Image 1: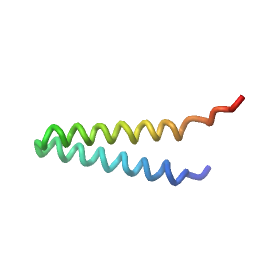
Image 2: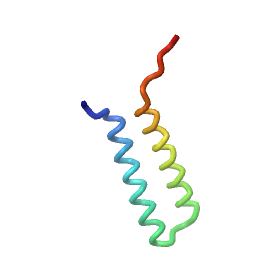
Image 3: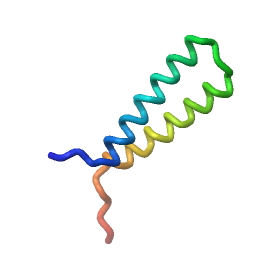
Image 4: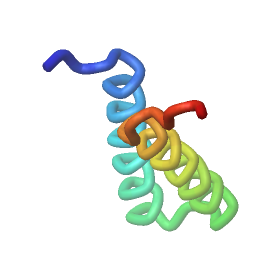
Length: 59
């Protein structure tokens, strides 16, 4: 099974956002920056879920 390039990029982006969240929470950053990072992470997670779902059949 080959890995979808879009899935791979989104996985990397999700990991980078997660690392940034850890750094920001440790450094007591702006709550707005934390909220933005969490929102981005959720959006990436939704896209990953959409890619992992099997395609729907058109009737």
